[in-house]
Length: 116
Length: 114
Image 1 (cartoon, rainbow over the protein chains, first blue to last red):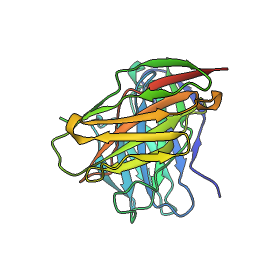
Image 2 (cartoon, rainbow over the protein chains, first blue to last red):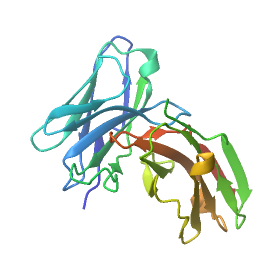
Image 3 (cartoon, rainbow over the protein chains, first blue to last red):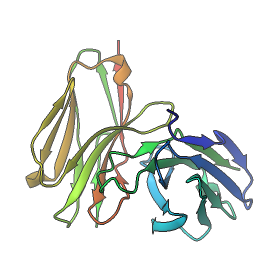
């Protein structure tokens, strides 16, 4: 049973460019959350998608946007990249029906984004 | 404000030593959830435990144990007889009742030497 799959694994972009990161949730999961983890820091919540809609959002600018597809996979888009956007981007999938328990949270291994 | 503090940035121990990772949290909510995750070098976060704010019973799972004390807003994690495979970064996290998001601490890097 495949867990959460993220692509690409590593990515190097130039300041000002745009980037798209992809996430396939664990089989049976219908909710996807995205986190940003800067070097030496804990992950920070970006947003969560369920039923193709953004349900919750953290304290991130509008340059960060997302999308969820009918097959529950998700994309994270970041426009006008800044050097400070360099981080590990983690995707976590879960089942919406898991009553706040978070037992269903499964994290991927992340995409390492470097902005130069 | 809701916040998680892990004051220990890095801990080094020799195999078979016991080690305790500290976690202090801040929240005004009466209902919340606390978590511990392990992050090995591969990057993914591995779920270790979840506690809700009404359950202060300590828990033991093999070599792992957790001490939850609401009076001091702490949720500490102890590894007994540490092993090299325990080497990783460990995160404590808080989740408010009305949201799914996790608020992480800055993590504690544990290095276990043979």
